[in-house]
Length: 358
Picture 1 (cartoon, rainbow, N blue to C red):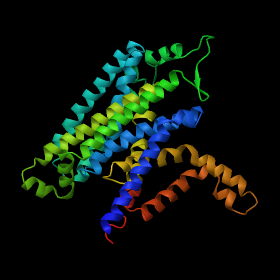
Picture 2: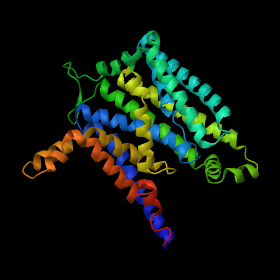
Picture 3: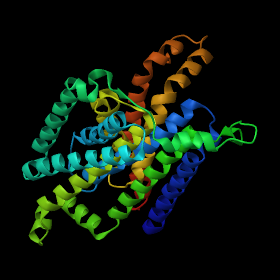
């Protein structure tokens, strides 16, 4: 009976994943406004970011505060290349590879030096490294644009799309009321790139490597006793996670056409990633999707919902004040506490294991 219930939970989560994937695939046609497209693109990027972080904290038990640092390396790599070389795919390739290379070098050095020590010391070392990179990005204004960041043009493919997708009268072709232009092409570049990265990481978790990572998480001493080089595996997955975050940063830089400390290296992004992992469920990979969708949607739409609720309850004492849009962070915190209480293993983790002990 427990196995049946567990299977139903897994099926429910996977069905939810298909619905989310379909919604993101057809987002430009379902939600025809600029803000909705921005939300969908951000969800795609954060699914990759959270999934890559889940490889560390959920599957291997490594707590790192440097994930946004690798995201920033990818973002700044693409941004600097596009700024210096112009809007070509050669610039994208060079910038992305540069971000990956820097991420690999830094991750390898941090991993080999720090992953032998206790978890709390490693977490502090990664926090210090991320803080140093944030300060450097702000101070090296001749290269990074400092606090103002860098603006640049999109790759030529998106401009070509604008020219190709016109009818005989010179008007942009529309499908279901949506213009087939460069913005749409950019979104599907983000969607399919993010999907490919997520599927690669999902495949890793069900491979023999994923089994070893889980063994290290559960009992590091036993894994080492049966012959696994724990430090080597932990360093490898740290580097793998860094590369995925770096590529996600490059994709986001191409979409946003702007890169700055607030969009690529902010510690607030790291907090968002942690919240998404906890809300979705650590060690499930599907939790990355659920956490990213809920958190990003809350960040963009919770304030609007509270504004509508405040107006609807205008005649009721105290409620309009409590539901004021400026208090959206307070209610987000309340929602987070409730989710942790009712879903102690995250939404995906709790649903997938519900009934397993019955």
